[in-house]
Amino acid sequence: MIQEFNRIEKVNGELSLPGDKSISHRAVIFSAMADGVSEITNLSDGEDVNSTISFLELVGTEIERVGRSAKIRGSGFKNFKRPISPLNAGNSGTTARLLSGLFAAQNFNSVIIGDDSLSKRPMDRVIHPLKLMGAEIETTSSGTLPLKIFPAEKLIPIDYQLPVASAQVKSAVLIAALHCDEITCVTDKYQTRDHTERMLNLRTALSGKEKAIYSSRENYPLPKSYFVPSDISTASFFIVLTLLLKNSELKLNNVCLNETRTGILKVLKEMGGDIEIQNEKESNGELFGDIIVRSSKLKNVVIENEIIPNIIDEIPILSVAGLFAEGMFKIESAKELRKKESDRIKSLCYNYRLLGVIVDESPDSFSISGEIKNHSPSFESFDDHRIAMAFSVLSMLLKEGGKINKFECVSISNPNFISQLKRIVR
Ligand code: S3P
Image (cartoon, rainbow, N blue to C red; front, top):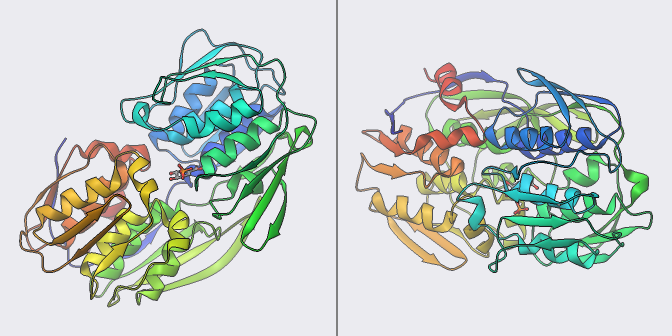
């Protein structure tokens, strides 16, 4: 489906966005593991979280869902039902990777499959540490889906230093470790998102910037009530739109403010963004609060390599802010961007070239600068929700608007993106 966007002049108002995708996946998974009934409010309504839900329903999890709330009856320790068909993770890397950790520890065979995009993404990064724990898993020769998981004799604890900045790899190991009596230690030097350790209340120890996280059966989840704060990655599209329009102000309620996720706010504030936080609260170890954003004049700044893991999902929309900011926008040391729902360096550079701006691309970096020459482009989403939403925002700022091809992929994280926009455009 092609979606057209006209130029808009101003936004104003307030939005309560659906729950954070990363926290929602984990709330559903931990509820399914727990022995009893858990309740989740403000659950993400995106397709990715639906993939986790339908995957777990195939192994016996009972889920009652009404709007953004869910009641989940979990199976208890190693008590899932053997699936009679392959488990489909759809487009969702978090589903495939976190659940490979969970299913490596069960007493039955299972097969994890995914859509075309997910079937190209690397799974060897999770399979390697799980095999060190004694898991029996087969992938294709290129280390991709389908994964064939066989019951392991017994999983053994490991000491594992994360070789890539990936919260999904970290979480897969920590989840598998919940099935061992002895303690597994994962060391994360990248400060990747820490929802798994927070939500499972795992013990952690900091040494400089390196964090050791400990997980064992003692930490196996119990039934709980979860409130999922709104998704800061989803909020970022609205934040950048507001900053770049004149005479605009927007309030985003109850947004996740976990410090491993707020890199986007830090960079936008350094760029001159008028962003204020009010009403900070905490639930299940996760900080959240209201974000007030106002029109601002932005200038590009040096984006340090260290912050890349904390803004990895927001780089597409951050680059839109960078395009309209004074000076050149540049991202470096970000090769992980090529391993997302699309090769995001390639997708971004392709679309920016359509505008006639100066684009420089390398294996792990890209930059954009110069004047926009084409004011009514037709962008490609590359079936990547964050590319589709980033270029929707950009289109609304162009003199003659723009079009997004294959726009329907926005439903992966935010199926109501258009109706939310309609509520705030003035
Ligand atoms: C996620 C981790 C990140 C992120 C993804 C969600 C998670 O992926 O890009 O959208 O929920 O753990 P990586 O672990 O591949 O960096």
